[in-house]
Image (cartoon, rainbow, N blue to C red; front, side, top):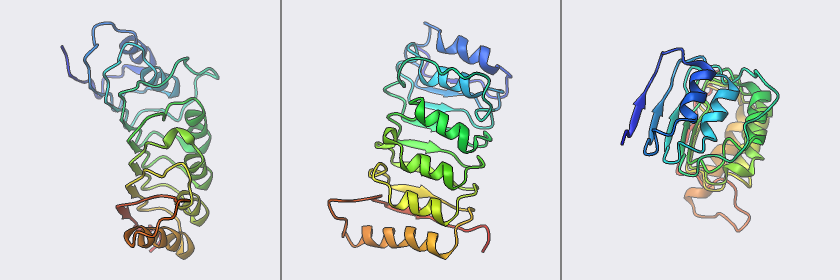
Length: 212
């Protein structure tokens, strides 16, 4: 009947992640915290696609090595249906690993995604904007990355992130045009002028350019 499991800072690595993903003793587990455990991309995806952790609602993988690709293979299967919150903060993911993750279906069905401090630039922002698997996302945290005007514009014009309510873009590299695109979007949302061809429908937009 275990509901929450906290194993932060235990060096469990991918082998430990795989053991957890294959365990038949955690059918009611809803919250799994595995920060700082040297888990790579493959280990993280094994957890996200586990057929045994069916009740998992939140997976915290902050400060692991999800940006490190140990294999060209991706785990089979689809994401856990109940998984709604995924924390990948400070994982050195970068654009290429982010693209791999998106193509693998690892973001499917999420409501909350934390990708702060991950060396993501405009190419990564475009991957997110173009990902149909993020159409249920409500909260997207992208602070402390390297997203400039082009990436900001891609996010603002995304036809997939239409359910997004909260976007954190603090400490990125956008200038006036990127900021204007996001602020203009926010203003139009508040004025309830979204057309049928809507883009992001934000309630909260957090901007703080690290160059200011």
